[in-house]
Length: 178
Image 1: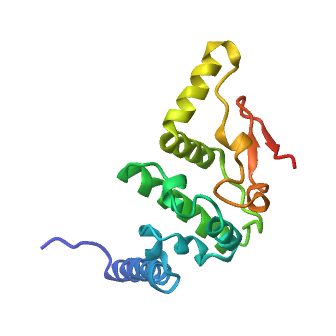
Image 2: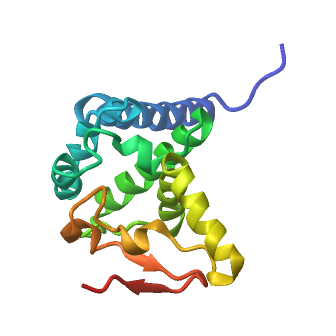
Image 3: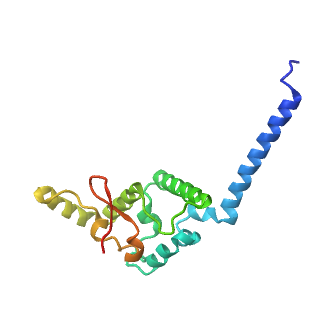
């Protein structure tokens, strides 16, 4: 029977791998159960308020006109299974990473990608209206305008929406004006 290496080295390697695997499983279990990570797999808007940084967005959504018509996932994730969970996984990872690293802003700012996801949701639910507006614009009255340019506070209060950056069609960021 051929020798498979130094037994001491193999034992050390197995111990290190065991510690790493155990640490990963422990952190994953903590995040999934104690920190209620499982709640993000569901469609319950209360899950978004698990994190103190999202409390004001959740509270303002509860008072908004969209409270009875749309949940967080309806506006902030794509409307297909793979896209929905890809966005949830990406956002969850970065929220967890920045929160754990202590680099989490008190005022949440939407990313360009997530703003585009929300814009697509607006256009999907209000398709007949947005098609009429865009059609009018294509007739020489300007380019496609983002819904959030005029309706920044529809899903959330103006105070929570005002911390989101607005993006020009050319990709430059500017703040909402009051």
